[in-house]
Image (cartoon, rainbow, N blue to C red; front, side):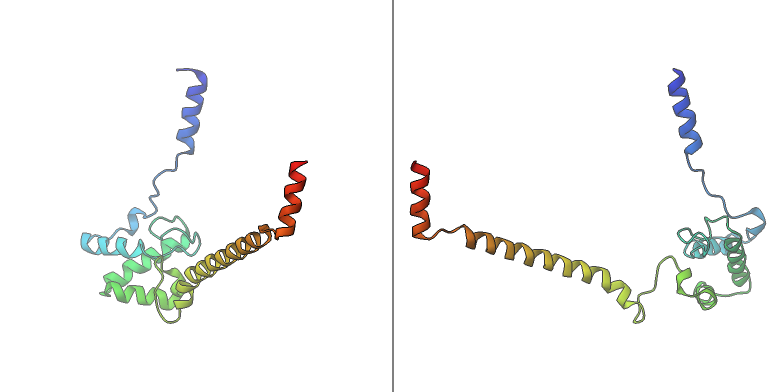
Length: 154
């Protein structure tokens, strides 16, 4: 193996992201059913520090606190929905990785497709106008055509 290939392999291995093992052993519940529920719930809650990771994948201290909170609520006997409701009441809907579709969020769900459709219609109208203008100016009157024919013969 050449030196360059070895160096490239080492650089690749160093740059390779490791598996995030954010859940600490002291957080894991003894009951495997409750632990599975906790993992399912924490996989759907956003880390408020990292923002694009679930609390299950995040090493942030707040994510750890939220994982512990979820497990405490489950041990206390809350259902999955009650845990979600508790966390949302405390931190807002932003904590959910999958946003809720409701009357208060309908604008967020409809705005992007609506703006895309408006943009497509505007582009089509602009293209049709441009085509109409181009075809309207390309037609010559009979006098202009005769003048053009005379110029092209000479």
